[in-house]
Image (cartoon, rainbow, N blue to C red):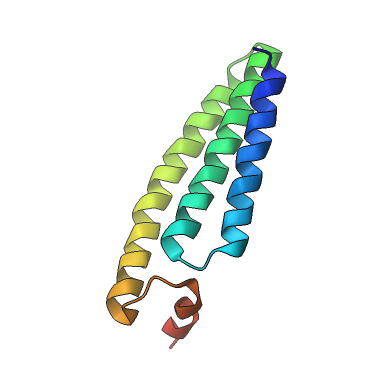
Length: 99
């Protein structure tokens, strides 16, 4: 398989994630779509790294995975606190948490 196929797949995954972020109201679904977008970016980084024959893209993809893992911890904590206080995981209710 050529790296172009991986780039097409990454573009498709990123588009699906972006549509999910823009169209969905559930915070958990939006969160999963953000993760899908990060994985698409990682796939593109690894594909470009393979095309150019160096490891820079793969190292950068590793750091993106570390940041995504930290985002999972913080994001899920925020979603759980939102659900506990409002009994809903809707994104629209997040604006009600202002003081």
